[in-house]
Length: 486
Image 1: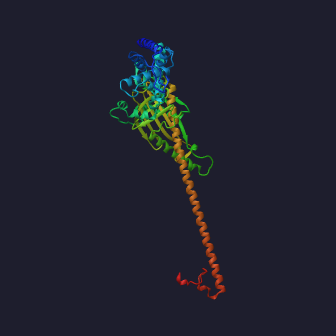
Image 2 (image 1 turned 180 degrees about the vertical axis):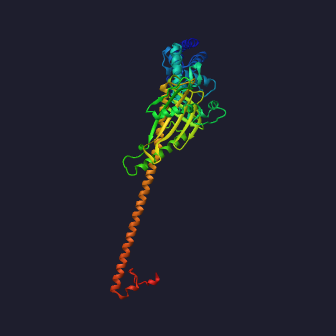
Image 3 (image 1 turned 90 degrees about the horizontal axis):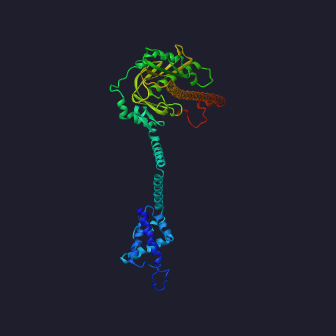
């Protein structure tokens, strides 16, 4: 309000000065009134008032709009008002002994440079936001909150997947570590290396046997389910006195037949035996390197499994709060490996969304003392065992977890086994081609030498028959050299 009163007062002064400036003056020789720059103010008081008006325009929030309003209120063009104020300042500086234009004058404000235009645009944007906040504060608050949330999501999505909760918080209705989007691999690595994850691990850090613990108590049920499992997940019935509240198992099979190329019945039994051995070696390598989520469906968008020095984190979509990604920390509880089978058991840690153990196993089946048959295969099994009083996921989620893990492990085994078989096949073929080429070259060289010997014998016989002295010389054609000089 004070600014408006001051502008009105300055406008009144400007009107009086603009319409009352009729002082007579004598132009310089050879100059007209227009060349002299027009009439000047008649008193020092009017000059001071014009100087105050110029300062008020320069110090206003939007000098450009203020200049236009003051000029319009006095019936002048903005450029005419600028010229008048500039001339007044120049005359006052000349009267005070100055010789140039001071910094911060009105001409600097009217210069059309890109930085000033950008500054004016930013100031106008903030002014519009302030006006919107004053006129409709509720709508402005909603829009500002949505804008801040959008910026936060765009900034955090590639770094952490937008963390919603880092642990179980009942007051916030959070059951465990949850992210809005799929957590990147770097974030999971940082989480496993953090102090928060280290506090979840037991202090002794001991490892037991894969046949012990909760999974070992129902090992017979797990093996029975693996023999009877189909494409999907199967659930075992638990009794009232059992310590197990849920047992979900999924199995996938990698046959030796699918690792071999089609056709070629010759030596098929030996190739099947070799393919079965290669498949089990690949299964043992995948199990030892803990590559359980390498080929998870969806390119890691549905599940991620990362391990690091005896610990692991499993991120599953829809396992977390509000149907988002849930991170389940795990630690290795035991490992076993034999000639035809191997297994690894992980137990859950606090801070996740479920309790229990996850057992990974591979077994070579279909082999006899005579060798592998057409039914030789590697069976991949994944089992989730949840205690009766522990947090358990839904049947759909439990079946989805074990099915995704089993499918990923089976694909990893098949891929590595096929690569090994391809390298061996190429090596055998290369050696075969090299052996065949060497045999052919030796045969050709032997035939050529035999022909040369036969030709030499024939020539010697014909020379001896025609020349009695032909036996003294070699049948080489070089008759000027003695045989004793060889």
